[in-house]
Image 1: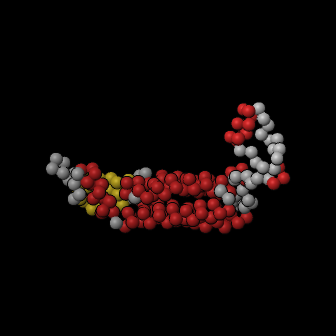
Image 2: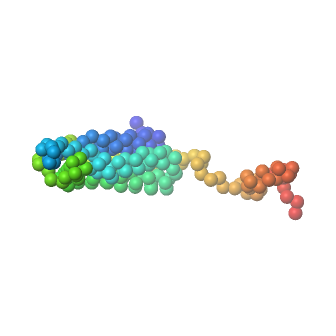
Image 3: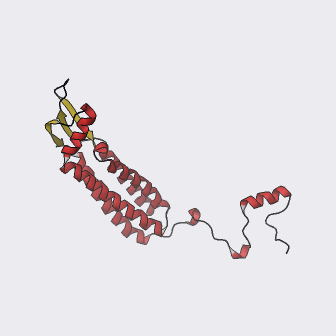
Length: 192
């Protein structure tokens, strides 16, 4: 099964959606205490712990759409953006997974107004899954880049048409409307 332009676009969009999905659940858990409650549970989601993951996921969804519509040069730019988004997702997730204390302290401050933790911060499996998705995104960018060499040129329906010298001068839409309002034919040759 070959990787067509449409399949590649769907792949990038799905990987972006998968990155967003892995950022939704809780990544870091901890406990803190307040004067009123000795045990306050702290749960920090991936989107809060690593907001760059959400941003990169949205960029990937847009990049998938751009990949479907763009030409050869745009495709290369989009694939660089896709690979960079994958690196950003992986780096953000690994940073949270390897150093959850700062994220847990920020979550405690938001949940209870204090930054002191009464139990060490623990990491769930979600940041590691998110990091794996980031690696898959980088691999997908390389795979799509290799497959894209065999793609035919995109249609010109989204490109600005070049004037055809055989048809004479091009008529501006506003000028054509004004000419029709005056009762003249905008496509008629001008008398010189």
